[in-house]
Length: 93
Image (cartoon, rainbow, N blue to C red; front, top):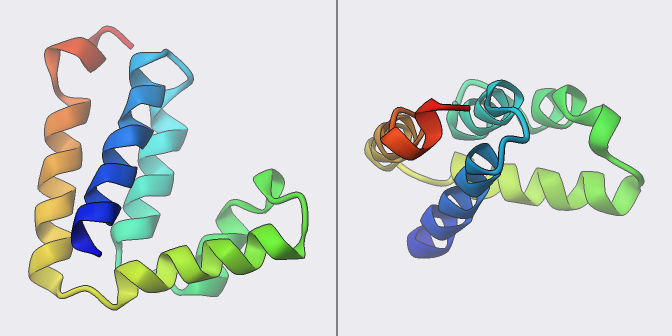
């Protein structure tokens, strides 16, 4: 499961490389990783991108995957994402 989460976050970083706005993407990723952000707060922060109840439910399940992880795992994911966003490839965006 951890591998799936890491791969999904790595795929999200490609959006930064494509120039689609890293600031909003980073905010979403950090809200996903942050255990103090509840599922309700998480979905509320993304409500402009949620077309329906099914998507909202799936985002809640996605956030729950992160809430189920240990603080050490979440810390490692945060370090990985900071490395990606501070990489040479992403720096120009």
